[in-house]
Image (cartoon, rainbow, N blue to C red; front, top):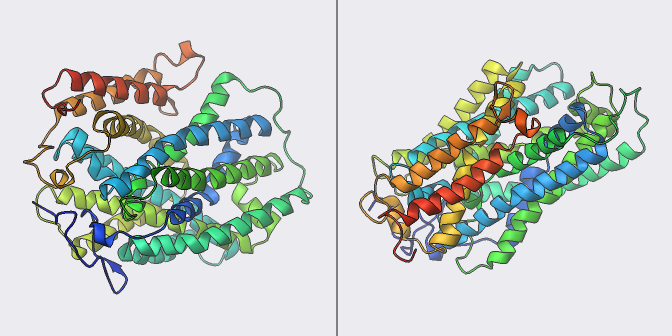
Length: 462
């Protein structure tokens, strides 16, 4: 047994420092309120990132009205995955990615742990660049690389102190960000813009609309590998419906609002202007500081979840029960990797990373589909949590039905992918519409269920 049993009492915090890492949260240490899930996800989505993404749809030629429809459909669809993952946290009391051992095996899940780490430090690096750009526009005497290093410091501190610190930060930021974006909306309405480029009009093509909606499906589904990490401390008997809607609404409201603001604001600008600089012009320079601060919670979430994946890999080879030192080292590793990546490639990093992360996220939609299918349809939430931490119990080294179904679902997406560096052979026949994520999700479910039907690894109740 590599961690304590879930009902064993322990002191979870020491002088504010989180003690647990991937350990099951004991029943006696459960705490928190459902409304904290709302503020957590509100703060993680009310930031400059969806503003920039919303503006991107208009820059790509989509009218504001249709861009807004695509944003709403993409966000509401993608968050179904996130909301259902959130329910797993209180029930099982373990991080999101560690649950993958039930589908892929104790060692087989390392594959998705590695992918999660790349996703985490990649998003962290991209966000550090966006924040540093905003601060450089505010205080031009300090270079972007210096701002990257400065912003990384509070991110590291909060990641080290852990779960409760992030929730507290997000409670305060939710109020600040809601007020800031409300002020921004009022000022945009009364703003006399410079001479703008012609505003796109008319009906967008099906391919353009689908691509726009897909951007936001992928943007919100990218939270799926994170969500139980921040709900696992809730009491085990908490209302599943309330948890679902707290996370769903907490993410949907700011993501949609910020993205629509970004689309509308971008439609008013000359095409040479950036959305970030326009926020400073319209709302005042002080908003650039808020925009930079708005991503700190998301930075910490990326680093914290990445740290949990690092510790999960290490746990395959050594005991990590309540290893504060290992958790701190993992935090330092993730923040350092993200900061170094941002420093090395900040001049073109965001554009290049966007393409890379879109491709990487094709890895997580089949994972999410299989994980949710296993939880809701196959095992119906009944897991041997202790076995998630042992290679010799219910979820042994490699569970091949899950691994094969997952890998096939990833590969089946290839003919349908339409990205900058790769276009699948079936994209043209589909009117240049990228439906790879739909194919990956659906085939992931079907292949997993078929694999279990013909496998000796299927749970007895299935």
